[in-house]
Image (cartoon, rainbow, N blue to C red):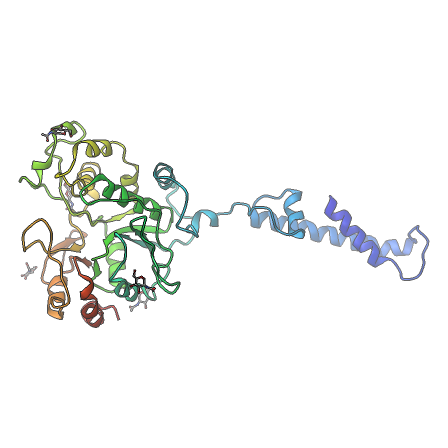
Length: 386
Ligand SMILES: *[C@@H]1O[C@H](CO)[C@@H](O)[C@H](O)[C@H]1NC(C)=O
Ligand SMILES: *[C@@H]1O[C@H](CO)[C@@H](O)[C@H](O)[C@H]1NC(C)=O
Ligand SMILES: *[C@@H]1O[C@H](CO)[C@@H](O)[C@H](O)[C@H]1NC(C)=O
Ligand SMILES: *[C@@H]1O[C@H](CO)[C@@H](O)[C@H](O)[C@H]1NC(C)=O
Ligand SMILES: *[C@@H]1O[C@H](CO)[C@@H](O)[C@H](O)[C@H]1NC(C)=O
C-alpha cells in the first residue's frame, strides 16, 4: 500500500542517525527499528478499521483522501436518510417528487431516536400577515415542528434569518380555489414535508389561520391521537351529493361521495395515501369541475373510501359559517376579544380517541390582518402561548 510505503520512509528518515552512516543498516539499529515499524503498521490498520466503521466504504482511495484535501463525496451513512433536506428548494418536478415522497420503510422500528415532528404547511397566496403570532407559538419548540410554505411562484418572501419562516418556501405553482390545482398544491406541500422522515403529523393552514392553544397542548393533542382529522360529511343537499357526477362510478358511487373542509390534520400514513393516489385523482380531475369545488370533496371522499377507520371525521380548524353565504365569516380587530376566543376554544363537546372531550379545535380561521394586534395581546391568556 502506497500509504505504508510513504510512512515507512518517514520513519526511516527519522530513525537515521545524524552523522554520515553506511547505506546498510547496522543490526542493532534494525532491532530498534523493526518493532517501531510493526507498531506504526498496526496503528494504521486500527485506524483503517475505525474509518471503515465510521464511513462504511474503505478502498485505499478513501484513506488516501483523508491525507489529501477532501474532494471525494461523503460516503452514505444512516444520517443521510434521517437528516431533513438542508434546502427546501429542489429541481424535482411533481411526478419525481411524489415518487420520491412515497417511499415508506418496511421495517417499522426506527434504528435511531426519532422525535416525531408536526409539519405545519401554509397554503397561501403571498404574505403571512399573522406570522408574528405563529413565531410566538413556535418559539422554544425547535426540533418538534417543521414549516413549509406554498405561495404563488411570483411571490418573494422576505423573512429575516431570525424568523421561523426563513427559507421555508417550497417550489410552488399557481393554484386556484375550487380547482384541481388547489389539491395539487396541497399534495405538493405533503410530498415536500414527507421528505423529512421525522414529520409524523401534517397540518394544512392558510394565511388567515391562527393557533388557539399553546404549542405543547397542540403537539400532545396531535401526537396522542389515534385518528387523523379530516372533516367528512355526507351532505345530501345540492352542495353535497348534488355535485356528484355519475361518470365517477365505479371508483366513486354517490353513496361514497363526501364533503369536508380542505383544512386537514393527517398522520404520515394518510399523507402517503394522498400523494400516491392514482385511482381517484383522474376521476375527480375530469368530473369534479367548477361548481363542484374539488378541494371540498377529493380528499374526504377518497380517504373515507380507503381508510374510514383512521378518520376522526372532523377537522381541528374552527370556522364560522353561521352568517350564511358562500364564504365563512372573517374576523377583524373589533371581533377579537377574550370572550370570543374562549367561546371558540371551549363550550363544545366532541369525541377524542373515542372519549368525550371539551377541546375540539386547535386552530381557527378566518382572521384578517387587523386582528393581529388584539391576538398578540390576548395570546398569553386564553391561548396559553406565553
Ligand atoms: C416584507 O415586505 C412587506 C411588503 O411586501 C413589508 O410590509 C414588510 O415590512 C417586509 N418585511 C421585512 C422583514 O422586510
Ligand atoms: C413543553 O414541552 C417540553 C417538552 O416536553 C418541555 O420541555 C417544556 O417545558 C414545555 N413547555 C411548557 C411551557 O410547558
Ligand atoms: C359529468 O361530467 C361530464 C364531463 O365534465 C359532463 O359532460 C357531464 O355533463 C357531467 N354530468 C353531470 C350530471 O353533471
Ligand atoms: C368515521 O366515519 C367512518 C365511516 O365513514 C367510520 O367507520 C369511523 O368509525 C368514523 N370514525 C370515528 C372516530 O368515529
Ligand atoms: C357537554 O357535555 C357535558 C356532559 O358530558 C354537558 O354537561 C354539557 O352541557 C355539554 N355541552 C355542550 C355544549 O353540549
